[in-house]
Image (cartoon, rainbow, N blue to C red; front, side, top):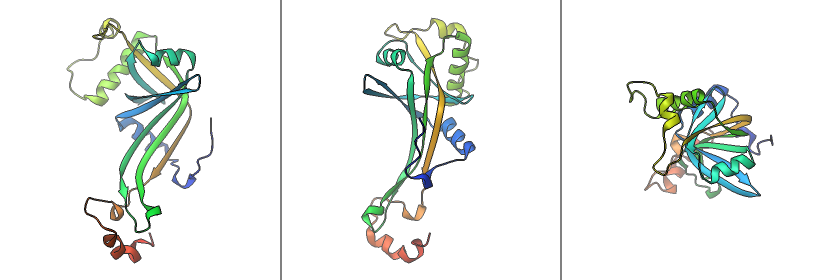
Length: 191
């Protein structure tokens, strides 16, 4: 799936910037679909070796949907603030977002699953543990509901990114009035 972006001026082509964003943003949303019914779940994730990885229970709706339809859209975004403007239609949001389209699969190799979970620990609690995650812990762990942990991999077929950079002078703050922006209008309209 590769439709051209409607707002192509906002498209990001800098792969280093996209990679850095995927490596550091904490939450992504996995978009799945089964029988024309969408299902989106927020997850912690890592971007490694050109793929998205996340973990979750081996029980539940997500697993049923993935087994029947492995096509996925993974969305990551970060909102940087609202930008005010004397023209109501020009009030805007500063953001960076990435969409990853691809195929999702369950990692079945315990060694690979353990390595991915270690990368996740390094991202979310760096330096917390004094030793690496053991494969035995991963294979024997059960949740309070008795479910094993599953590690999922999204292999991208297409990635797109968009950005609307923050203009500091336009950043809205509580108490800001249109008259504050109008005072700056001649200087700022040229940017």
